[in-house]
Image (tube, rainbow, N blue to C red; front, top):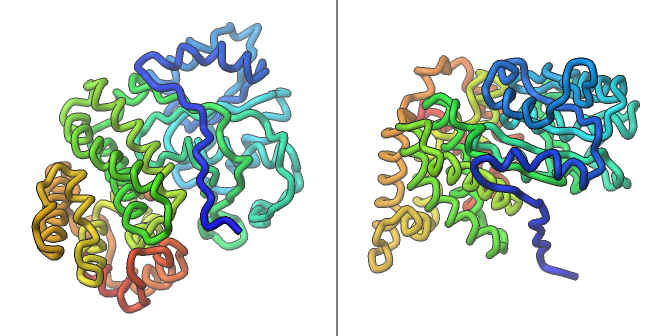
Length: 384
Ligand SMILES: [Fe+2]
């Protein structure tokens, strides 16, 4: 029996203007009537205009269609709406444009196209899902890395909780990373989404599974983010920085096929219960989570610090952790991400529900060190 499975299969086009290759690529995928899945806010952005230009056609001879009903935290209805529109317009492929939400909905809608009566909550199965509609993912933020993932996060009607639908067939057939599409992202969102990517890289590198390929990708992702995120934050039109952030975000998501950790378990309930942006929630919990892990496994962050550019080869384990955590704390503060949870509407009254959901969340089970319910409570209190 094999000890591990390594998988990096997504073809990715990268570069300023890469979007212009889309028509040619659609032909190769035999897609003639794509459905574009996005959200209503994106319809009014230059990124959508660019996509519309590249797809071409006039209102009369329209050969592509749009579903723009995706919510910030997508629910089952968003997926059903996209699948219904796909059927109505006799589409033959899906292009998702946007942040993590449109990408997740675009991915999952193909399931319902194939089996319209399928209950999404049952979709953690091993049945044959081959032959799903071809899927092209075009991110307009650099954070979740959903474009290279084989999962889709949808809030279920039955439980009102986020469910992770997972299947290798959900993977995109093509990812286009075009930094020109992210130029318009405001500084706050640039910082928050970038902090999500940074957290993916740090948590995946430090979780204990054996996956040296993901480890290498995570460390280079950290290196790219430390260089590029402050530049993209200060100057949104820095194409080089935007490009490096897009790649780093995809790398973070490739790396976290290894696993994630306690910071994501703290962050998920902050979004479902307090509606906090996922990247912001990670940013506000990251330093406390790192301190918690380093106290129990000294030296855990030495190589993270070296990837950040710190000279930590010769120092003692605890000193290496302290320097790395101090660096990350200042890095986030310089991006305006140093607030307490309280400043974003979280109160003591939320605490019990937050702890309960965080404890149910699977991410902390793969954390570098074991996490108890009381630890989660303590961690929330530290950042409250
Ligand atoms: Fe994340």
